[in-house]
Image 1 (cartoon, rainbow, N blue to C red):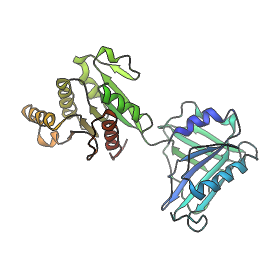
Image 2 (cartoon, rainbow, N blue to C red; image 1 turned 135 degrees about the vertical axis):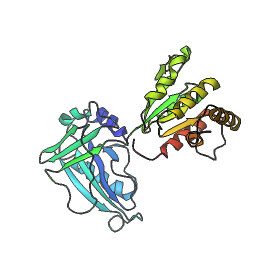
Image 3 (cartoon, rainbow, N blue to C red; image 1 turned 90 degrees about the horizontal axis):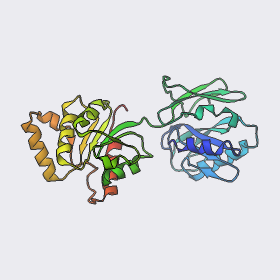
Image 4 (tube, rainbow, N blue to C red; image 1 turned 90 degrees about the vertical axis):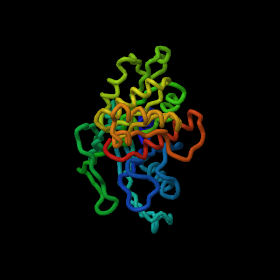
Length: 307
């Protein structure tokens, strides 16, 4: 949901651009609040769901390009009666002619930023306010007008992902996680892995300190090159205050051996039950690194709770 930031950085200073933002939805709608699409005279980047809703929104966006930069309007679309779509929901859109002189807020904006948009007669003033509380906009009732202030988190809250191991599967996890709502902390103990972009080299004797530093909302995923190191990380992750997820790559045999050792080392059954092994959503049989990585990331995306 944050690709539009890069599109905006790339396009808005070079040519006239309209930005279409989904402010609110109700009922069944093709995309949710926060979805955005960039429209120029001849191109589109992103989608708000396709169909007649998007067709009409693109028409509105190209019409607003004929007005001065900073111009904006809010449009409401009841998807059933107005557009003949079977969804039956409602969508409230903000359509604006982007003012290239008002893009300073883009510096430093990312998925975790809270964006405050003040709607004015002459344009929209935007700032990043990390301490602001994101609000909500209704898809019904009076449309926000000049003087209204909209406060939103730009992307989904990112879950800290503490990944141990930079082998083939670890590298596949990182490749596929790049566009997902995770904040990666990636560790390995092997000197030859230090050249891999994003890997933090940690001394073997200090690896448990990385586990201890993970915040409570973190997912800890263990897939190192060494079973003994995997065990040290597993017992460290289960012995600390609980985190959102502790996952271990492994076969049924590896799982049985680890569970037996954890009990011998004094961990209670309710603590051991926090371990997920094998990792990944069930039902996928492939053992290729990309298959394991995608199955694991899908499992992490299912996690609930604060991030």
